[in-house]
Length: 113
Image (cartoon, rainbow, N blue to C red; front, side, top):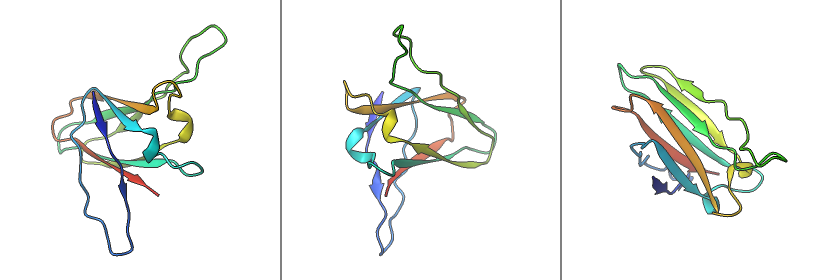
């Protein structure tokens, strides 16, 4: 599990600094701006698809985790995924994102705005 930092986009331009995903990565709540969130840009390689899930830290009345619907990123594709403020676990201060599929050639950027 890696704790990755989001980049700010500047008027003068920002050079992307992509991360290589692991099965489970975290994002600091400090990078997920209230009222906006954080955007994850996922890029897959030529022969591999991936699935990305933003975990829901909220619990039901019986203590079960919220339902998560993964986003599928087809081969040779790009997807933007919103990481909302509600994804931050108040106990840990981070949001957790999980990745599935063959991750070879898959990268992602985090952008705060």
